[in-house]
Amino acid sequence: MTKRTIITLFLVALVAVSSFAPALADDDTPVGWGSFYDADGQLLPGVIQGGEISMPADWMPTFPDWTGITLDATYHVLTAPDGSTMLVPSATTLFAMALNPIASGLADANGSLGSGPGGLLMAGGLLGSGEVSLANLVSALTGMSQVASQQFADAAIAGDGSVWAILNPLDPNNSNDVFNLLKSLATLSLTDGNLYLAAFLYQSCLTSPTGCPEELCIINPAVCGLPTPEPTEENPEPTPTEPPTCPGPTVTQAGISMTINPTAPNYPVAVGQDPDQRGVDVSASVRIPPVVYTWYEPEYEEVDECRASGTGPSNCTRPSGRPGWMRKVPHLIGCEKRQEIYPERLSSFWARSRITDSSAAWIENTLGAQWYGAHVKQASFLLNNFGTPAIGCDGGGTCYGYLDALGVPYADPGFHTLTLTVGTAGTPVTKPRVITASGEVGVWVILPTLIKANP
Amino acid sequence: MKVIPLQSRHLITGLLVFIVLAVVGFAFVWPALVRAAEPTTAELAARAGAQAFASIDYQAGRATWERNLCKVSTEDACKVFSSDLGGMLWGGAERNETRQKCLATAATRQATNGERQIWNVALTCTDLTTAEVTAGDMRVSIVEADGVWLFERPLFGEEAQND
Image (cartoon, rainbow over all chains, first blue to last red; front, side, top):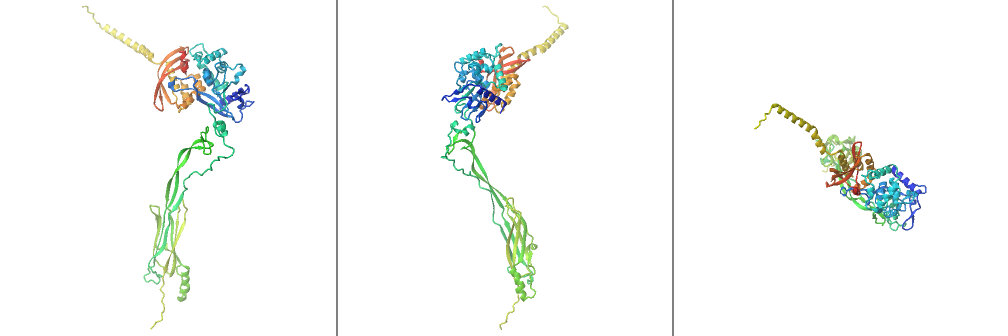
């Protein structure tokens, strides 16, 4: 709160506590300073200080029309909880009203301070000096002598423009020329504030030129002329529904292709029984499609909606029938699909062969019974030793690994489990992982069989 | 026919007279003529004040307007424009979104009262938004203090009856 505002309120309060009995409004309801101040001059709880507002007034002195420059009337505004509004004109505004007292509503044709422009004029500080007249007000406001202020009042009430002759800046003997008065008013308004001698009281903020303050309308819609919510929920607010939103992000990946199988020969035999010692060809491969990260960017547009909160007086009615405020609200009008492709790179590639347990048992038990000393010579070994893995990713983000292990010398007959184990480095949206695939290769054995001759 | 013999001393005397006249004219007469044609400091004060008062740009703000006005005004006038009256004027400027720059094209003195003079200033104002040009007169008062003329205020339209 500015020093000036504090001074203003203090002086208004002083005027209030030392003033006269409340005036009567149109319906004979007592109204007055008491709606705004208590007996100690303190601002009553709930009184809203609207600060200083300005508004055009056709009774203000004018500048040439072509300049477009106009003077507003300025007031300090207070609004009581019951909606009654007090407009306290600034010093210069009050002086301008005195220059044109009839049109501004400051005084009646007899020079008495009367009902204001639609409101009730209260002139507290002037009562002690006797008659509440325009001349008294001018004298108190400008410091003019009683004689001069009476001449001023008479000329102003006559309304023929002669009041300006009293303010003639070219009269060498005139101490009340326009500029001297403006200077005096400026000095007082900046330092003293002993200018707030009159206030206009409006029984309702609806009839006040400044309207109703937003805070009051929220607290008490009725005094602002707004529908009052019923105590019972006849028109309950509709259950809030979740506003439309865009789908959440997704992570997708096509299926992985991964194999490990013998490719030649069709019937491999243990390398010890193969005169060519060819061995077995094993091929292992893996193809990992890229990880696709999909998300949606919401697109909004501003639309006008009647909402439950806002600034200023209510200006619309919500579907529930309650007062509301038109506001620009973002509405979802679409979702733009975005995608990012991440290759899932291979970090390891291992191919291994291991004889099955049943085959190992067959060698050591069945075959060993017939051929003394038969045993498993090489139960498990890395196929990487028989070829060089090739790993990488193509331009589409698919990552691959290949191994052609050629001429693998299987020493043990039986079935061997082929296992391909690859590790990946993961992606920004997926974790590293290990994937396995398996196959099988059968190694034949040539056993001599005694067959009874059949002569 | 009478013959006047032209002697060399006559020629020299004539040349010297011509030089003296030329020097005197250049040194005194010409500056006096120029000074007579130049605006007086009073006129300059009236022009500058009218320009500063009518040049209102609500986007630049009231403080800018006050600063420009106070540069060419008396201390008391600056106080008046910075107080209640300035606020009353600026309210309309903001509501009307006034943006104009004004230039004084002529000024004539209308009245004098001791240290105060009333001038009529012809202004041409350009709308800074639409480039529309308007022109008209504004009457202003200026005052002299310590030999310096400064702007005091524009006169209200209602004061015309005092002319």
